Length: 186
Picture 1 (cartoon, one colour):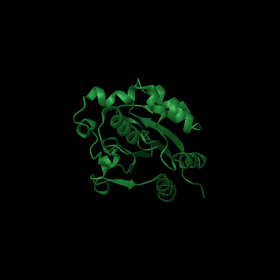
Picture 2 (cartoon, rainbow, N blue to C red):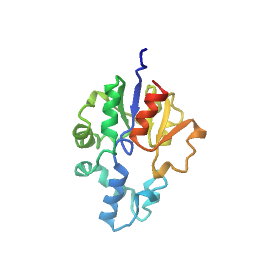
Picture 3 (cartoon, rainbow, N blue to C red):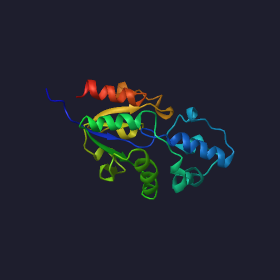
Picture 4 (cartoon, rainbow, N blue to C red):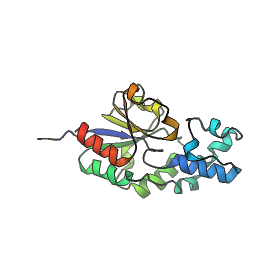
């Protein structure tokens, strides 16, 4: 019996790596704030750090050295490699700002995910325009309206969102993602 080979679209930030945790730590260090990762209940960081300007909040992301601090989420390297070894087509789909993408690719993808080619990276401001069988993402706005199976990676900023009511499957780690893809969609 042939197993179904899927085109799996995977978000980068806070889906395969810990951007939010590093970003919060960097802002706390730079400005003496005391925000905890688990307190980031909204997507809009200006609401989480109201005393900072938008320029101050986004400055770390534009610093090439910042991306060397970002690390893979537990299991992401192993399970993405397994998905590739199982014959699935994997594409990283990111809405990263064009000025940050070079540092992000070099310090995160090439360093920790060397088996993912730059040819398998899609940069877009609208993930709903990208074709695939599955999208794994922590941003509900990227999943809503898409014509793919929607897997929502749990994060503090999406915990109040009713994933099931909105046709999404909430997952908590990469082992769970792998098992769901293997058992339910192949």
